[in-house]
Length: 135
Length: 225
Image (cartoon, rainbow over the protein chains, first blue to last red):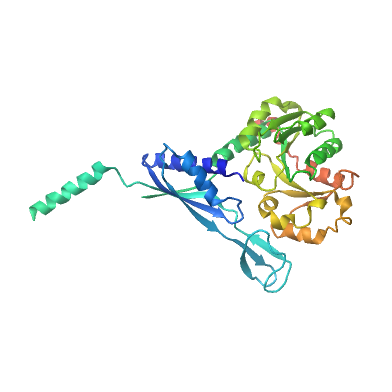
């Protein structure tokens, strides 16, 4: 429901990281989002494609890693992945003494940026050519 | 080439929230973020709370609303300082909105700032405002399954206030089921049953809120340095 400010957040975190890493173009952004965070992946990608135009992140792919929420039973220690609405009973022993873990993650884990600019790779290739010339 | 980042998506909002917190602390203000679905009784609770506060806690309100000033007018009629933020259709308040509202508040003359968020059980939970405490106001007619359906909201708060508790029988509200849904998210969560209509339970809630007020006295802080 609030994918627009979320997408702006993703974009500004990613661009700041890319600028610190030398200002090269962003190829992909790795996001970690818990299954209980109310974020719709397709909607974020839709906003992202518009907001990123003309920035370092133009054309970047968003890669979502969904972290599951785990319901743990106090009584039998059974653990199961859940989504909302949460179950009220342990599916193994029927206990009502449960605790929810994780599923609320919400951060940019990493960005993938373009390889170093051509002049460095030219130097490498010319030195390789020099080596091959000696052979 | 991969670059590790590991930074909160809403980091820029969080930074402003920290500035807001520092401003509250500098003025000896306890700030409370009041969240709920529409109609649960946020404005009623804020009004009822204001009328029961001990004398050393003078209130003010930031009122988040989609477009109208109905709630702000209600509070102003009771002589509570109130600043209205119209979110223009936005589904939540964010930290920059609070920052821009603060210059319009008599910061030196208040000790408790209550922020009424936009009526919504999803979005407001993700946006830190810089308040010291967050609560969700649930109400009996909404049903006892709300914590199970909106775990993001109910796990993001420091206390739950259950309003319209006088209607539990009418709505066959299962309080144990409701409480277990909350304890699943945070076992030690304070839960206050109140009725803003009859006044039942409000004293316990206001007493708890008042005990949360522990200002850092600026004078004492500078002496310590």
